[in-house]
Length: 387
Image 1 (cartoon, helix red, strand yellow):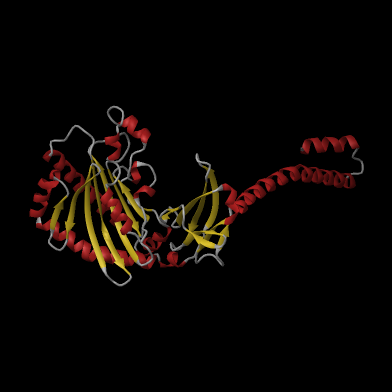
Image 2 (tube, rainbow, N blue to C red):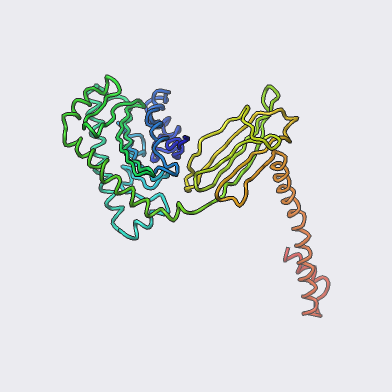
């Protein structure tokens, strides 16, 4: 089952989880290399977890992502925390503003019920940031790494399935690699590599840490998730139809690639495929995953490679709860729509001066009736002044 990518959808600035290229070049010692920039992206294991940890209509999730860096880089924060509800950014905190803030409209209901909610989240994020950065300092000391830029990341949260089953997890990454994962059944940690073994032994011996993780993942996390689901149920009940567009590109081999995009739709479930001569066509087709937009809607795409002479045989077929009836869009129809829009603008541009001249003439005629003594020269002057 297709799931969502979370972190590739995060805006490209460090307060949202990564460092902009221009900031890296200005703030790091020397030019940034590939090893440095890769550290700011989550490791593959966390990306896979995120793809399986987001809402698919049958599973709901509450996820938190922490990112800390070992040294200051200009005015960029050394610690960032992001909170996600069902794959959508709900709140954020960073060590510069030192203030947790809402990132979702439906979060206002929580603020109305509890005016101190974000103050509580701010205090919690501040303390979590201190502990998180302390863990990074310990790892640097254990590995004798204090002169380079290093990145420490954490992803933790819980999932609630439609059948009532629950799942919690807590994963850590270091410099873009798997590092540690928590087993809440045994209260032990699993090291992903030799570099993590020292930290694993320390954390295994810290039973208080293990129990705190277990209590949160099995209790508090689900209480918060259910609360957020209740606040956001009106937003989830809405139906917004997709906006479907098509484009084409000629390939080197003379083939033509058609791209069909559906964006701005909700709920997530959508059925889209290619048809040739009215029949479902799967040959030479590609499709993406359904991914979230920042406004709470979703985006999806599919493509097909065809002989351009047979273009008229193909249709992009889209079905969604927000549509009154399924869409069947051909490339010619999409092109005509674009041409019609462009011609419409040209018509407006042509008619606008005509309308303006007509209005001026009417104004002049009216002035003549109101002021019989007005000469033709006066009228001309009035028109020139008006224009």
